Length: 148
Image (cartoon, rainbow, N blue to C red; front, side):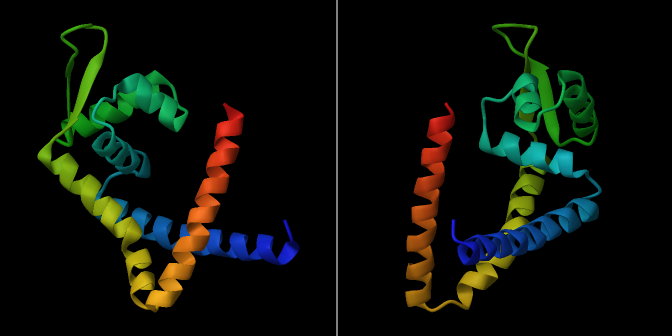
């Protein structure tokens, strides 16, 4: 990678992280939930078939840690946890309406700055950015596929 391109991509990644993560963290504080809880709510909202083990794998933590995190979210009324009728050892995790609302609001807050950025781009600039990002996504997918 050429040094100017690498620096440009790093600058973009830093800007993206600062803005999206900053909004994400501020939103979590306002809702009085941890980043781990908010991330879990969003993951559950995007993956209907998700259990405790799946969350542990997704976030790289133990099942015990996920269970503790979920217990607090159950007590807060954000997640409903029940036994899987096919296998009582597994727990079925479902977001409550409050949990769904917070997950959706969290994602919106995380992406708000990006929406504002897109609004100030001309149509031509939007097309250029879209084209380059699609190229990067395709190349990144090739790297991911090579790992498996």
